[in-house]
Length: 190
Image (cartoon, rainbow, N blue to C red; front, side, top):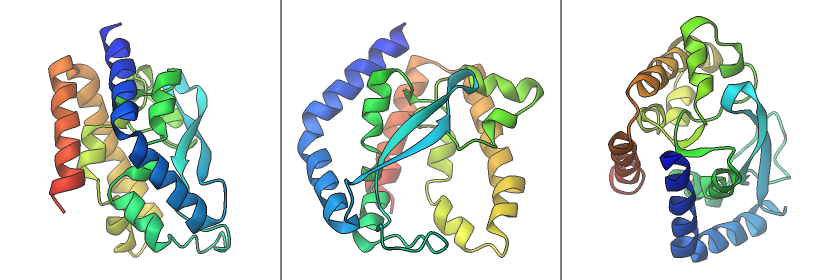
């Protein structure tokens, strides 16, 4: 109950304070991608329930699907996590929390077995210890000869370990610390 109340207050306060950033970022995404600027994708949520996640679009519509080239403005939005701002609406809707495992596409969290399925008891979050550790995940994967194999055999199992640790040790103070670390790694540690 306290976590949900915090999620609502945090989202409303952030939207109120940074509405102009959300608006400018969205307008940049609209102009840059020549779309409505919003990317909607199905993700796995709490208890394995599917939901639609909102992000700002960072790949122009003219980019071939097999290439999916991120534009320069899109890269800027991603570098500062501005493309994630629409997820504040997912939090207000109750699909997500401020802190929790990052929601993944079908084929990962929904296929977990045994004790690892405890992760599905958590609402997915805007940030987590795993997202802080892998805040340069795209670059890390680009350096791999077989990125999907590396993700599935190294990164994803480590994310599961970190998210299980969060499950067993979650607290309000811990969530505040994760939020502060996220701000630090997003805006100050480049």
